[in-house]
Each structure stands twice: as C-alpha cells, then as structure tokens.
Amino acid sequence: MIAYLSGQFTVKNPAYMVVECNGVGYQVHISLATYSKIQGMEKGRIHTYMVVREDAQLLFGFADETEKNMFVNLLSVQGVGPNTARMILSSMNVDELEQAILSENDPLIQKIKGVGPKTAKRIVIDLKDKVVKGSPGTENSFGVSHNTIKEEALIALAMLGFSRQQGEKAIAAALKNSPNPVDVENLIKLALKNL
Image (cartoon, rainbow, N blue to C red; front, side):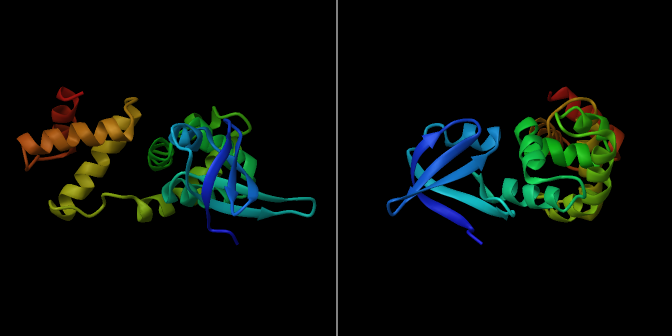
C-alpha cells in the first residue's frame, strides 16, 4: 500500500493530478476539495489510498489525513465504491458530511450524483458511530456536559443550514461571553446572535 507521495505536482486538474517522484509520474485521482487545496502548490505531499482491481491499480489522493480517513470510511459502506466516495467528497467537505451523518440528514447526501436513497441511508447508519468516535473537538476544557451541549448545538445549527465551521465559531464566541450556558436552547440562541 502506498501511504503518500512526495514530489513535484506536474499536472493538476479537478479529476486527477500527476505527482513526479524520482523521475516516475504517478497519476492520482483527487476530489474537488483536494484540488482546491493544492492550487498554489508546485510540490508537496499527497496522502494516498490504493485500490487494486482486476483491470487496474488506482491511486486516490488527499490533501490531508481527515479526508483520506473519511474516504476509507465511505468505502466500508456497502454500495459505495471509490468513484462514488470521491464524488461525495467533491460535493461536500468532510465537516459538512460529518454533520449530515450526525444529524441523520440522508436527503442531503442523496442529492449527490450517484447516491441513491438506500445508499444515503446506509452511509448514515454505518458511519454514525465512526464519525462520533473520530470527531475532532470532542475533548475540550469545559467538560463532558458542555461537550454534549456543544455537539447538540452544532447539529441544530447544521440543520438550520450553517456549516460546521460557522457553527463552531459562533458557539465559541457564545461560550466566551457566557461560559456556562444552561442548556442547548440557550447556547443555540447565543450562537445565532454571532452568525
């Protein structure tokens, strides 16, 4: 298994890139998220995942480990192949996908080309536990009860149409002004004032 490639980015387009390592050019299939992150780079490191099929050996590349881990998680879902996983990660960033899974918003996932209702439901069911366990920011300075309140508030803000990043910023600002929110409802109201 090739874990990553370091070298010159000789070709970059929305579907794939070529990374030259010691005179060998590796074609690496990428998502739009990775493509946007490597735009200004001439060389660097790309995390990779190799898919071996009867007729081909394919490399899929990611700008960071978080996207690679989500790709691997998506592959564990029955009915999701590497191209579908790449399409999902091109349509939503990892934070948005995590929020859709945590809030059980399979209709949002279903809007992605190539993902039907059954597959969207399966992604939510199969990955909900993995996303909760692997979520960044589950440990912080304000304890377990505040963690639960913060997570529930993030989910609520996501359901209102805000991205995870927007939600986290608004909640952080709300907690700065009121470090001990009484409940989720109060935290959401305080966060909405910062959006």
